[in-house]
Amino acid sequence: MNVVVCVKQIPDPAEPGALDPGTKTLKRDGKLILDESDSYGVEMALQLVDAAGGGEVTLVSMAPNNEVGGLRTALAMGAAKAVLVSDDALKGSDALSTSKVLAKAIGRAGEADLILTATESSDGYTGVVPEQVAELLGLPSVTFAKSITVDGGTVKVQRQTEAGYDDVECPLPAVVSVTAGVVEPRYPSFKGIMAAKSKPVDEVSVADLGLDASQVGWAGSGQDIVDVAQAEAREAGTIVEDDGEGFQKIVDFLAELKVI
Image (tube, rainbow, N blue to C red; front, side, top):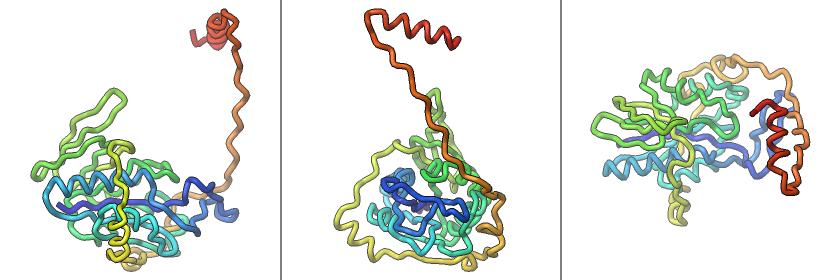
């Protein structure tokens, strides 16, 4: 079984990111790490390949400056190889442009039985890329997966909902987005880290994918960031000191807000 996992390499959340004053977009010129949201998809893919008794996991990513730090982490977990799209023309890409690039890169990665993604990235939160990729590839899409099993040519997914989960089935190949926290991503072993250094990463440009620069980046984007403003600070809360009648003060406060 061959599984392709779309992964994003992002600035380290432990080090507050900065906005480019000119483009008003997140600076990505430093070291990038594997988005934690994508580590669950990588782990899920590795488990599915193990359960199938054969096959491999291929990573697909889009990042500036030929950055491979996050990819090496996923390769150390057990993925076999990666396709990295890196091109200055990609600067300013919106969700749809990103989806066009990923769809082409998935095709370059080889024939896949299943494509896994995160539900959304930690630095973007659009939540639309998995469905756009599926549409561009002409494949069925299942979102918010908490459990995935493959039975012959069918993928069976427990799709997480607010009330529990839905049992969903669709034919392979398909695109499935994985909910964060549903599996425990393995830690790369020392052996895995060393092996990852020699695993192949196919570094390609926009032109290599058969796309024109006018279709991606600022040129192909349907968005224009005109302003970025600081979020409003939260107002100070109300402290209720319990003198034995604290409950009544809370009830009166909720009644004033017409909550009760």
